[in-house]
Image (cartoon, rainbow, N blue to C red; front, side, top):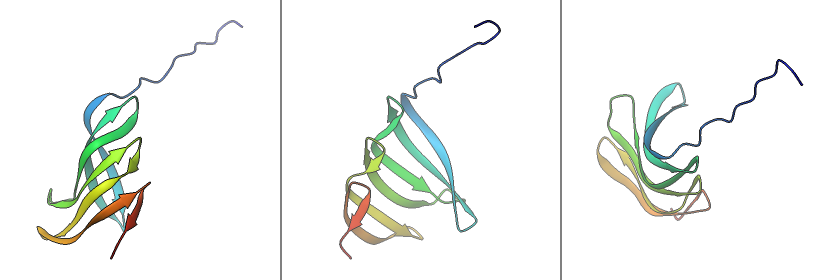
Length: 88
């Protein structure tokens, strides 16, 4: 085949940020990527750079203990399994 150029997308490794939007509000996820997947501790900041969540990822899924915050106060402390929140 002539005139066709192929290239692979770079695999993300290291610390970085990802922009997310929910209910018309922008959030920033600060975390670490390993082989293109989120892994390790992560912090979700609202549009005012106030922490909304602190959690852990394993292979792109939220896994283990995490916290939800509202105005700097913990509103939920619990466990996530395979990306789903467990508990009340």
